[in-house]
Structure formats: C-alpha cells, structure tokens
Length: 276
Ligand code: GLN
Image (cartoon, rainbow, N blue to C red; front, side, top):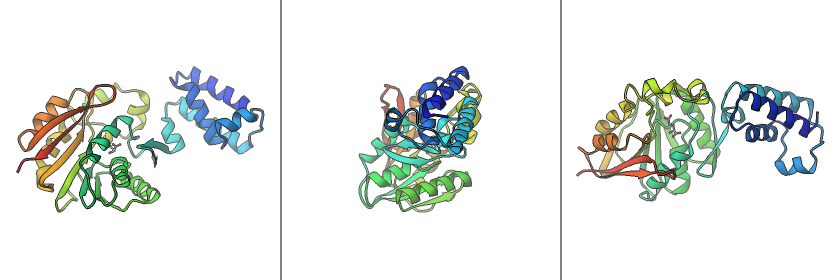
C-alpha cells in the first residue's frame, strides 16, 4: 500500500466514524505510523509503506474511530512548547492550562519552592521548572500510575522534581512560595455529557469535581494556607463559570484574589496571596 492510498483510507474511515477532525487526525496518524513527515509525503506520495507500518496505521485508525483520543494513540501532547508523554492514566494537557503556567511564571524566581497539587502528567510543574531556572518543585497525585507518567516526563525534560503519592496535601510537609493546581472540576452529573473522547477515555478521577464541581477547591482553600510561606501565592485553574465561587472560597485567607481570563475571554484561573 502507498502513503497516499493509506491516507485516503484513513480519512474515509475517520470521516464516516464521525470524528470531527478526521482530516487532521488521519494525517497525524500517518506521520506517526509510517514515520514520514508531511514534506516527505508530498515528495513521494506513492512511496510504499512497510507491512508493519500499514498494519499499525489501520489499527490506530480503528482505535481513533472508536473515539480514543489521538494523544493516547501517539502517546504525546505538546504543552508550553515541550513534548509530554501521556497515557490513559493522565488527563491530556490542555492549552487553556498554559494560562495558569504563564500567570505563575510572572511571580516565580530562582530558589523558590513550588507545589503542584493533582499533578497528573506533571505538565504544569515541569513547564515551570523548565521555564524558570533554580526552582525547587514538588508534585502530588492520588494516582500512582499518573505519577509514573509524571516521573517519565521529568526524566525526559531533565527536570529535578519530587513526585509524591497521596490525596492533595496529605504527603506534603514544609512550606512553599507558590501552590499551583488544576484539580478535577467538572460537576459529577456533567461528566457523562462530555464528548466521548473525554468521558469514555480520560481518567474520571481527573475530571470529577463532586456534586457541584467545587469539592477540591473547598479542600484546597482550607488546607493550602498551612503549606504556604508568609505572603505565598496560589494559582488555581477553574471552569469558565467557577470564578466567583472559587474567588469566594479563597477570600477568607487570601488577599488580592483575582480572576484571570483565557485567550477566549473566559474565566480560567483564580489566584491570590496568603494574608499575613
Ligand atoms: N495537572 C494536570 C494538568 O493540568 C492534571 C490535572 C488533573 O488531572 N485534573 O493537566
């Protein structure tokens, strides 16, 4: 089978399976399975693909037709310009989350200690470590399997961090200059209404924020002051309609509570400074 023949087949299958980005996904998977760039494709579209490449491509197209997210098939997602390893044990890093990283970066400096609660793939903490030299980083997650992915990402990115397993702050000791978190924040009954890629394949524990979606923010708002230095900062990712509620949860212990919008103009991050 030639590259162009395989691509045609993949596009048709994904399109008829109702995959919205069928064209792009058929391309990405071809580049991955046949190990060829788009430029190479256009130079030699009639190049023969090896039998193993062909078999791999068809298997991936079948999985993508079953709504398995592309990133779990290629095992990669870009975030803040870095390539992160992902699998079904971690949430796929979202572009929206880059806002949180950028906000936190403005306040960080060499020598500061950063704590990432619910670290998942480690994308937030590891990006901060790579973009601000000299930080000391700790990440926590309830999932041991997620922490394996985070550890792999730390190795690949050459970041020296410590990942510890446990519920929120449970495995943490000492005080930090900065706490960042993108906790699960979807209301339980809304999880099942999400697209199949998310509800059927991303870890439910990384999505489900309890009955009203605010379960983890309540815990974080109450527990975080104990782990922050005087005037330490907190940055929390939120859902577009949770700004006021989460700002209200931080208000009793934090000053300068602000809601930051994402590129689409939606509320995305709440931050504050621990009151002395
Ligand atoms: N911190 C990780 C991320 O932002 C995981 C978040 C989560 O699992 N809720 O992608």
